[in-house]
Length: 318
Image 1 (spheres, rainbow, N blue to C red):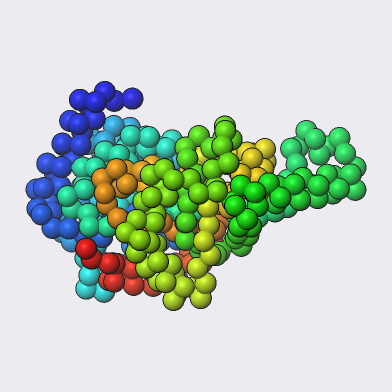
Image 2 (cartoon, rainbow, N blue to C red):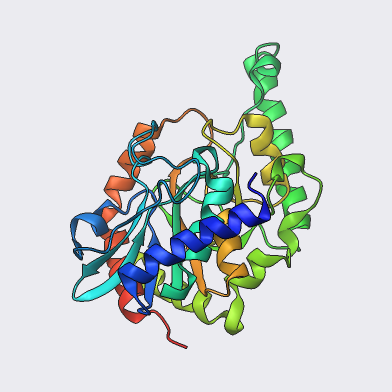
């Protein structure tokens, strides 16, 4: 953890570099997640606008090890369909993102008039699996009965947690708009978060009388034909969440789980930068891989490209 003075020094370093690159210009910032490769390949970088996170941000070394799509860390002004935006690399918690998101977004706050967050995430739509050590002690019929009982209980608990709103059963390839983000450390399951958590996430997602939430929902509806609203939770990563955690999250009303968004949303809220967040469903419960998730993302590049172009071009102004 950085001390207060170290944090302020790092933020000041980012501010100084940003001032030299962008002056007083303000942009819509886009944190590209899984499936946004189409935006990258259909936009042009503006020369002399690249801000590398390393060495300004501790723990985020350019080109450090990691899966495809998680290595390059930078901000850069790019142009799509004649409109400039600030293209921002995501930083996951395990990549140094505990403090990195705060430093980057706070350091760039003078150049951001709004932010669009995105990620790939897993759906918790059932039936959720049993733990391996339990399942191997049961016959197939016993395991089926046990899964049915547990998933019925999860649906009932989630209905209570969400104040009567049922779980949103997201299918692989479907994009949802995030209506709530569960607090950090959801693994502890200390609260029924999803029934209207009123901390910085909910307040940020629904700021300005839902102006930005409604705008992004409408934009998603236009390109996908639907705009399901989801409750989302972060885990630290990089390993996938085990069945036990999936069940805990679902019974507390969570629809989708990923490895980013919460830290970025908190930093935007603390810096009064408006915006919202969407999530692409890259997988359901059970065994999956980063490569398979990336393949789902590639299959949705055209949809996300249209969403990005429309959202950047028409993003509300103060």
